[in-house]
Each structure stands twice: as C-alpha cells, then as structure tokens.
Image (cartoon, rainbow, N blue to C red; front, side):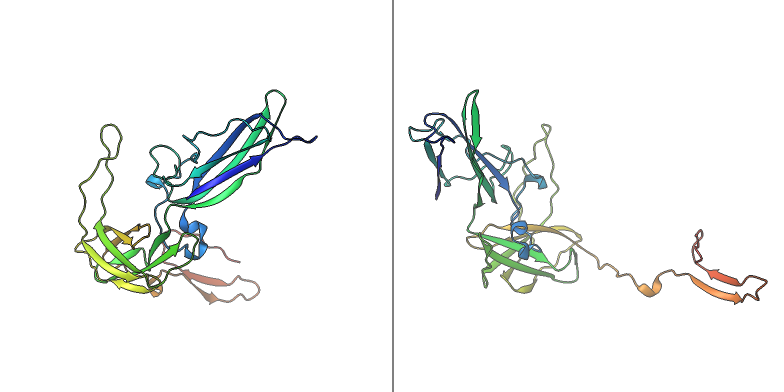
Length: 278
C-alpha cells in the first residue's frame, strides 16, 4: 500500500507559485487501540509504547527523497510507500503498531513571504486485526480458574466474533540491565499454562498457578497483533465485613431542665478522636 500526496501553490494576486522553495512535513504519533475505540476501553491491546513511556512523535518522511521546489505550475507531489514499519519516535522505540500520521507542506520565498497548508491526518494500522484481552478482576485466585474475555477487532474498530484465541501464561520476569544500562536478554521462557478462548465470549482459562506471584497472559489469534496483560495470582483476599467496622455511638443520659444542660455519652473505640456536635 502507499499514499500519494499532491500540493499546489499560487499567489494571492493570481498565477502559480512556480519554482519556489518547498518543504513537506510529517509526524507519526503512536496511539492505543483502546483509546481510539472507547467501546473496547476495558480490553488491553498491543502495547503501543516502549517501556510504558510515550515516545516523542516520529517522522514518517525520514529518509525519503522529497521535492524541494515547486514545478513550473506551482505543484509538487510524492508517494509514501507503507511496505516498511513506520517510526514511532526515537531509534529505541518500537515501530508504530497503531496511530496517526499527519502531513503538511510549506512554501516560501526567502526573506519575503511563506505559507503553510492545512494538516492532513490519516489513521495508521500496522496490522489488519488486533487482539484485546481482559480479566474480571486484577487479583486472581490460586484456587480458581481465571475468568478471561478476548476480543478481535479490525483495524477500523469492528469486532470479529467467533475467532479462536490462544492464551499462553508465563511467569513474570523483572527487567534487568547490564553495565551500560541496556536491557539484558533473557532466555526464551516456556509457558506454564495455556488455554483457548473464543472472541466475544466470557470463559474460564483452565490454568491454576502452582505458587503466588505475577503472571503474564499472552493472547494470540491468527492474522492479528497479539497482546499481553500482567496479573497477580495469590491467596484469596478477604472482603471487608461492614459489620466488623469500628463505630461510635451517642446516647442521651440526662435531658435539659431549662437550667442545666443535657448530658450525653459518646462511646467510641478510638484512643484519640475529635467529636463535633451540631
């Protein structure tokens, strides 16, 4: 696939702005799939950012040979091929999986005048489909299968139902760095569990961890960008019992006779407390 751009410039007084200085400007901005399509905000899709930090915008025109002057008719154009990944910022940042491409043009006569075109925005998707995954709870129990739900959507946000989704479970590994501050490469992990889901349907993942800790759930579907989520699996947490909450009570001991004030007894369980009577 490719995108063709054409621009045309002219003078306010009339006639083409021929053979003048020209500059094309491009900006690529990474976006989260779940932010672009709010109806799927509860799901986690492919991680759009490296190290969970938002990189600066990239330049999708970097490395291209572009026109630097308008032609005799005040026109110019170029073609941007999309057969290679689009930069999402710095060289360390991963290629943009999903986001926005913006383009504009600037013409000028040195020392005299300049003009900018309006910006053209185009949604970009590296993949035709994306897998999303969510859990009912963030804290999963050791004695119960995890309740998962997967979704597969197209690049333009339409759900694809009844798609097979495979979820592989791995023990979470903390990142470590070498003496140069670079991430150390770790040996390839083997999954400690695996289950299969159907997109658009809630299901239990037939997996129970042998020990408490953080686990990575990685969801994959044919022809779609995979995703992963990290969840803690541990002992059953105790829901707070409202009846066990410490409370204070106020009791009228003596009513006022018009001359002497009333007496009340405040019974409260705290060592130090401030009471406000109104």
